[in-house]
Length: 374
Ligand code: NAD
Ligand code: IPM
Ligand code: MN
Image (cartoon, rainbow, N blue to C red; front, side, top):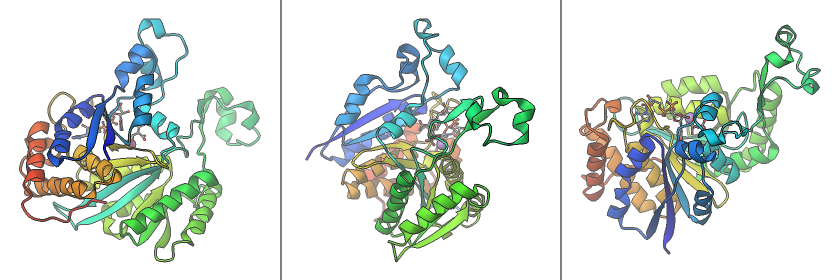
């Protein structure tokens, strides 16, 4: 049956890597109907909404959504860049990325980490980041409410005054954690990983850490063949650099997973190699881990590999695993050959040149590579 694939190129290099990588769909000749939609900073500035209503409608009709990247700016810049007729109306900017994750309840953010080429021992593992709550739950404000002052007894609060303080709450719920951990163990089982590591900070965040730990172990008890490990997140960061091959699936709270996944991208060779999937029950959207990279946008330097791999993840999700393997294999082949690489990987090629090399490798694989990154 024909699948509907909605592409939202977004801002900056998001548009460039979409344009460079999407021709792979024509090459693979799959029953997929591609449609484009509008999203991003310009729509916020012009309409006070970075995701227009028509785009939400397209999202609701799609089997899978592909996002390039979005630019998000701080509170002051967001308000200043609105067209004058919208300024002063108290519009609040929320990153479209966060809107998608929250509204579609895409609770698991899957970020494969791999080194199949280059220096160092080959490995693959996956970070599964909680995607709807934690420190991203939305309780983030300047000024501490009077009602919390009995509970927040830190001496600096008295020194500064409640209005000269800011507070962000890390929300973790049994509902949110159970579905996340279940997904992490299922993912491990389905992808041949024998260990799931919870990366948290239970030695300091004793209450929320213990809460998460208990739920983690409760879910783990249903997965006899998979080892459940609890580690301090700082130690996980160290091991991701020193011995990443020891990990299978790493599961973490929203902000901790955000930080770990950029670190892991660094271990792989850069954000230009890191794909991701945002998964809920029956809904999903896919995006490279990187952002709109304003420092290189428009210069032809963006590495398109993360976008190719992200398209692969979307295809796998829609049931086209063989096509996804071909994309993974082609990216690996080009990265291994070390020719036609963009500057972030030490080459001098443009986005288009590297994309052409990957497209060529999809059509004519040099050897049968089992190169699945998941
Ligand atoms: P970024 O990922 O855009 O860039 C970080 C660094 O990595 C930059 O030096 C950039 O040049 C480099 N880089 C990123 N992708 C690359 C690629 N494909 N090839 C080569 N180099 C690459 O992160 P940032 O600078 O923190 O954020 C820039 C903007 O993107 C911000 O507005 C931020 O909010 C947004 N952002 C969006 C997403 C998303 O849409 N999913 C993710 C992260 C950041
Ligand atoms: C990511 C990004 C987003 C996040 C931003 C753009 C809101 O950094 O997808 O990793 O913090 O989750
Ligand atoms: Mn991030």
